[in-house]
Amino acid sequence: NQTRTKYGETLIDHYKNPRNVGSLDKGDKNVGSAIVGAPACGDVMKFQVQFDDNGRVVDAKFKTFGCGSAIASSSVATEWVKGKTAEECLSITNNDIAQHLALPPVKKHCSLLAESAIRESVSNYKAKQAPHMMKAEN
Ligand code: FES
Ligand code: FES
Image (cartoon, rainbow, N blue to C red; front, side, top):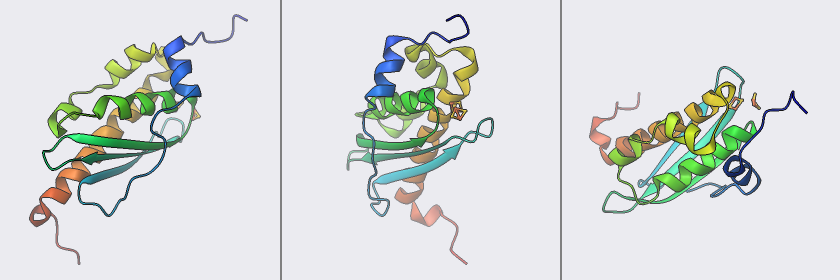
């Protein structure tokens, strides 16, 4: 079938057996949470990272309401952040993810969604570590 995009094995594996689906405790100050959306298609990704007291990721979970490429991208992202510091997490790019999964060009924004999810969850964690830097409520 020529009209079908050919997806690679890594992508299909992560889509069929996504790693780390679920939720972490949002109230934990070592957990950073983010919900990001892709304006292009309306897909939504919830992503959470949990750091230990030494500032390394010990756990990560996601829930993605979206296409297979978005699910696979978030699955890879949860695996890659583990063991990393906040700064190291931020060095993961959508290109790394897209390459790893061999995403076709039309699916590049799906990996971008995962990159944004990592960034925003890490910055949520950082904000929780420095509460005095946060805007006072009301
Ligand atoms: Fe959103 Fe992929 S277009 S499901
Ligand atoms: Fe929109 Fe994948 S996130 S098609």
